[in-house]
Amino acid sequence: MEFSIKQSIPEKQRSGCLVVGVYEGGKLTASAQILNKATKNALSDLVARRDIDGKSASTLLLHKLPGIAAERVLLVGLGKASEMNNKARIEILHATFSKLNATPAKDATLYLIEDGMGKDTGWAIRQTVFVATEHAFRADTLKSKPAKAASLKSITLATLEKPSSALKAILEYATATAHGMDLAKKLGNLPGNVCTPTYLASQAISLGKTHKSIKATVLEEKDMRKLGMGSFLSVTRGSEQPAKLITMEYRGTDKKHKPVVLVGKGITFDSGGISLKPGAEMDEMKYDMCGAASVLGTMQAIAEMGLKLNVVGVIPSCENLPSGTAVKPGDIVTSMSGQTIEILNTDAEGRLILCDALTYAAKFHPETVIDIATLTGACVIALGHVASGLLSNEEKLTKELLAAGEQAHDRAWQLPLWEDYQPLLDSNFADMQNIGGRAGGTITAACFLARFTKDYRWAHLDIAGTAWKSGKEKGATGRPVPLLTQYLVNLAQKS
Image (cartoon, rainbow, N blue to C red; front, side, top):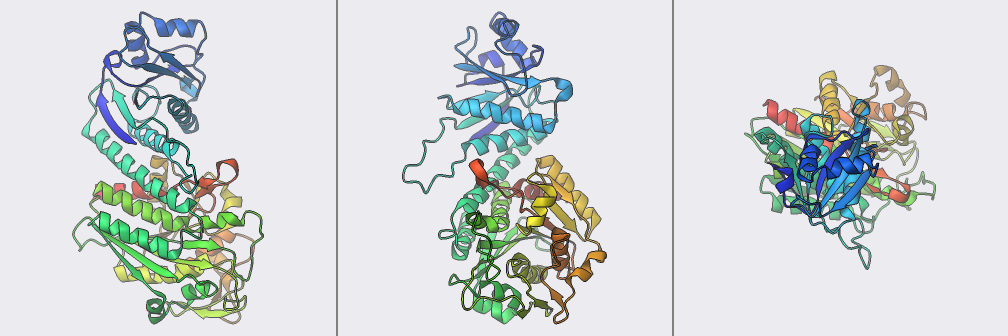
């Protein structure tokens, strides 16, 4: 999907389809008024006949209107201006692209970002790009007969005034972010027999070959043993697939600037190990590497942007399977930090690989470390599938991430990381245990990770409820690539 932004005269714009808005009650937007005048009141006549009433997300497709250069015109209902909110704006965009993709149009010109969305133009640009690419995304590449791709290949975001260089930059960044989301979704949707730790490592190496600004390296299990990563290696013991510790170093500015380190959980399949999960919906545990996928997607996006920032991606990746060699409940392992861990539940494995990766992250002398993980079912219970859980050891970092999430409409919600929860992890036999009980499960999981992140500012994103959808719409979402890229863009613009 290609995107552009330009000043355009609606009635003279040659396009497969023009898209303009109509408010509930029949009020035409500025661009629709121009079309209405050129067609000698054809649009207002349709409104008067109630062919379209302007209700939010309603649509009406018109063909070969007189006085219009475009082949088609799509009228989109915007609802009441006073009731417009982010949810309604996103629904309007989805309705728009559902209708566009049902036509043979190869290109479309949208006049929604400036006069119809009732939101700042930058936000509207980002969401238009994200929704358009979501509708173009296909998850059926492993089918013997994949569905035919939609005809729509090119989107022009049209403005009545000349767009600023700032808006053009937002469009470029949004397009790169959408490409990163596509990569994250593609990887997330792959089955565990395809997307193995070795496969993830090959994707990182491929990124390094495509983008010279990225240096990719892969540590093998023997390397991890030398580093003392006993916690990480305990998780992979039941699998025949070799674990990988993947590192991607992006250098966008002088090396004297400390990097942001993104640590993504890469469990390519999680059976729960000896603490076996129920069989129902276990297939969805292929998505337990969506933290890793989001790091890969973010690294691709910032490399495409050429962001003036140093960023390191660290991905601990393995499978969690039961076997005669698998770690057992009650086993005690030693982490890279030297702290010992009593494993009471082998299905709380994500924190066991992340803790060693977080210790390893310190070698890069980071400015900030953010880990991203499908970590706890408790987060789904707490926040559902709308917001990602956010916990941090610094309030300023929390605010920066929350703000980036609002900008990108990839929202997170802060949960407490108080010392009061730490005693729940106390063990009689080791420095800590890997679970704190059912109560506050998302918080105690983050409290566990906090014990390995005391030397730098750190945030934890629990994406268990947001990384993928279940049911009829089953598939990876590409989140939180928009949040992460927006956060990094904001940092780059400050420096």
